[in-house]
Length: 266
Length: 296
Image (cartoon, rainbow over all chains, first blue to last red; front, side, top):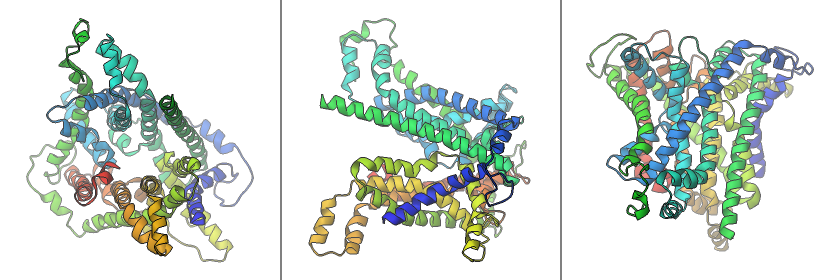
């Protein structure tokens, strides 16, 4: 059992190790080791198309996550707090992007933009970064809301009531009592959404236009035309960065977990 | 909510009570309506229009697009998609169960989280780059064949074929399976296993008659998640499968961004993909335990 599990660990890390190995290998085509080099990293860092695509991706992820964090948190609080006719429907629509394949959402968004949004807005809506962001907000929203709502369910419902009884306005109670309690969940939801947005290829490529490329679109185009050592270098950098974000998200979760346990002990 | 605590009405700048739910639920609701509900309804309508190309306006007229899937050119694509998903589900289950079992029952409690997280860490890397890494490994002069030639085994030509897609999908989805199985196995009551062995059960009897039934909900939830995710997978079949491994997701992509566009047919395919996923979820809700469904 232990041996088999270690083998599976090897399986999980093999592709990453292979990418890292070739990103330092001083040969374009060879499978064998031809000496250490930084040149693929230099090549990648001086490649303006990749850097523009990276900037686009960061912009999309940043804006989409920021919008989704606000409206997703409001939605999670609203869904936890109110009963209303059609709540079941609202809830299933809100979490639909977690289940429905990306490709289905991507084509639907494209058709909607091409057939409704662009003609009806008189050309005000144009395919490009704006439409990519709008489409990314949809799935970011679902992921952030689901992380936040698990936290709300674990909260003491009397906290906010106490604040209200002590004379806080609902707005003050929300900002000063509920929001700080939810913050760790919001942050880890945002990190998750950020990584998913950075990784998204399908929805971006269906909602982009005017030659705007995000990083996955650029990478996809290059992989199609063969193996490129500078892509190896890019992978290693991306893997390091996302690995760091992941560790950060886990650390934040761990720390709040510890805090909560301490509070219970006191 | 205590609706009538007296302090609440005293502050004039507070939102009126009935406005609160609108303030909380309206922004996300509008966004979802515009960019998820309307588009999906539109695709549904479009799926009844045969032979539509971008820019054309035609009235919905029938089920032609759905019947087209039964055409001998396209039916194998549907079967292949199902084959990939079922095989991936099976492979991740067989490979993932021992790992989840090992982490949940053999690793000391305080290390379990760390070991589990390091197992799923590769999940956080770009899916395109993971497929790309498999190209590097599986291509004719790649890592795998170089390693095989060292031990005098003839090279395997699996890139751009179905095995490569299965490897890529299994690799991508194994972490999800392990996460869900771990959650189920971690709750396993160990006293039952001790009781089984005290009563004379062999380890394999204990495994099949105690461990497996106890973790059945986790198995069902993990299988469902892997099945629906692999049904919609585009990147692995596209990059690792070559021309021979056309799947429904790739076919949909081609109907919209490919050379021969047909939005009506693409919409019908997309609806079918959603339908297959919904059937899988409905089956789980009907036959599975409710806790398994909420695990997804």
